Each structure stands twice: as C-alpha cells, then as structure tokens.
Image (cartoon, rainbow, N blue to C red):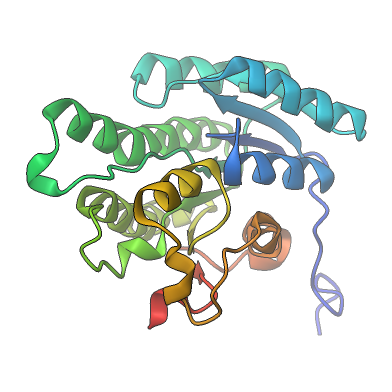
Length: 259
C-alpha cells in the first residue's frame, strides 16, 4: 500500500482552501458556508441579501473561521465576474465552488410569465454555468486543481406534476452540466460533482409547504430533512479522499425521490 494513502484515507481538513458559496444568505447555502468554514476553508459567502451575509460572516468569525461576505446576483454576468475577482483578492484563488443558488417556479409551465421563465433559467442554470467557467478559468490559468459541487434536486429525476416543471428542467440540466464539465476539465484536475437533495428544511421549502400543504405525508419516512444531513456528502466531495470522483450526482433524499 502506498504511503500516500494512509488507512483509512479520509480527511475533512480544508485548511488552505478557498471556497465560494452561492445562495449563502439562508437555507442550504448558509449551512454549506458554515460547514466548510468549520473544516478550515476560507469562505466567500455570496448572495443578494448583504445584511444576512454580514450576520453569517460574523457567526463564522466568532467560531474562529474566516469569511468574507460578497454581494452576488447570479443572473448578472458582470456581478459573477466581480464576485469571483473579489474572492480571489480577499482570500486567495477560489479552488472550491458550491453552486447552490436557485429559485422555484411554483407555477404550471403554460401559466408562467416570460419574466419568471427568464428568472428561473438565469438563476438555476445560466448563473451556475457562468460561475463554474469563471472559477475554472482562474484554476486553469494558475495550473491548480479544484473542486466544484453543483446543487441539483431529486426533482430533476422525479416529477409528479405539482407545478414545478421548469425547476425540474433546470435541475436536470445541472445534473448534465456536472457530467460534461467533469469530462472537459478532468485534464486540469478540476473535479465537478453534484448533490441532488430531497426535501430539506429551508426558506424555499417553507414556501412550498405553504402552497402545497404537508407533502411529508407522501414520503416513506414522513419527514423533512435537516440540512446537517448534507454535511458529510459535501465534505466528501471537496476532500482529498474523493480525488477520483468526478461527474457524479449523489442523491440525498431519504428515499423520497425513489418511490
């Protein structure tokens, strides 16, 4: 056995790494930022709600971590370029990207306005695509490896007509984007993977429950999941132990999307 791979070959130590998390002002994104910081990464927490980012950064710093709040609108290409440049300057080259920002459509496809259609495409697909490429350009130019984790949804694989057709479409595209970018950037040692969560407690889920009622009664375990249950998957996909894992989508859904 090679001395390069101690037994067991597992570590969550992210010291010296720089992570950029989108949609970090609430929900899963906030948890991702705190988790990465607790593992030693320097975190660029990005979102549109700057006041919430400041609060998050204060919490991380109080726990001994390092965090820079950065305003980011993922529907704006210039905002994406500026946010990545800001993170690189403030913390060092971003080598972990968590593409988490997203919005629901919450309407039947034929009833959606053009404005809502554009917003869902721009937030859930165009923004993550542009952001992944912006971070990749920096890593390739510096000849440094990196990790990207895109957040899809089990809704990408299972749709029961509940009024979220475009959301499902964009999240399915995120799954495929993960696969193709993993192939394209493997030669540069940039690993691109994806997490497809089921129903987790979040602001977005609160809105869905208000609109649709208690959907948990249709789940095998009849519960919403706590965001903490994503920590281990997230850390695995950005840790040294997953070096050979790229182009993979991991479902974390408590059996919800497999029925």
